[in-house]
Each structure stands twice: as structure tokens, then as C-alpha cells.
Image (cartoon, helix red, strand yellow):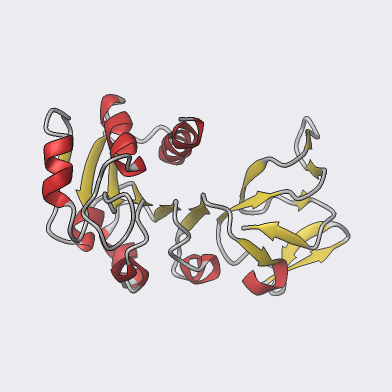
Length: 212
């Protein structure tokens, strides 16, 4: 599945050249309020990461037994008793199911127990600005539409900036609704693509709304 492969690619990119990387996965069920893991993207992600030599710590409020059975032969995969335990010592935390209890996680506590403050949110569980203020590098994979001003961003001479002069979070994702220009050495022309911009890099989409 191309979408699942893109997610795995984003996770591996976020890990970079980390030695002996560990990823925490929150949510194994196909959707919240069920223990059904059939066709769950989370299982595919766990299996692909483990096959790539990445250790995975996973947690789900109700689907643990089903996941254990479905992935009984997967090496480098362990299960934890809580979301915080799954996040302990990880280089990236991936949200795969939009359980309500994940929305109320203490971001400051997560920041303290994680090895690297990286969150990849496949279900738009968190508010980007809130996560950024807590000191995380944050990527919202699902592409939730927001006004630029809603996340503290404004446009100035075509460049996306923040009202206080700094971006509210270090890593952000923009899906262009129209043709835009990525400021880079290649000056690549983009249309309907997802860009991950690092802190300090300007993007000039020439639009007033974006998927963040």
C-alpha cells in the first residue's frame, strides 16, 4: 500500500542516522473503540520497521492480545503496559490509532522520557502548535486543513512566517493546494505534494490555506 509505505518512509527519515533506533507506536487497533487489528496500518508499520532493524515498543488500550497473536513471529517488537512506557527512551513516537486517551497525554512528560522529541502523528491526534510549544519536532501525516493563522503563522511577501518571528514548531508539513515554489537550491516546482520543512526554511505556496 503506497500510503503505508510513505508513512514508513517518513518515520525512517525522521530517525535519520540514529544508531540502534527505537520507535514507540501508540495504537494497534484498526480504529478506536475496538480490538480488531485486521487490516490495521499499525501492524504493517510495526512489521516494516522491525524488518528494517528498528526496535519497536507498542501499546494499545484494548488490542494488545490480538496484535500479539497477529505479529507473533515479528522480531524486535515488544509490548508495553502504557503509552508512557511505549514512549520511554524512543527516538520517535508514532500515533497510529486515535484513541481519546492519547489526546490527553502529558506532552511535557513525554518530552522528558523520550530520547529524541519526535512525534509522527498519522491520525491528527495533537494540535501542531501545542506540540511545538512542548519542544517537539512534529509531523501530522494525515493532512488536516487549517488556516495558517490558526497555528500562529502568517504570510509575508509570499513566505510563511510566525507572528513572533519564529516558527511555533520545528518541523511541519504543508500540502500545497496550488502550485508553489520550495525555496531550495533546485527551486523545485511542486503541485499537490507534501513538503516537510525544517526550522528556518521558507515556503512560498502563494495560498492562504494549507494542510498542516
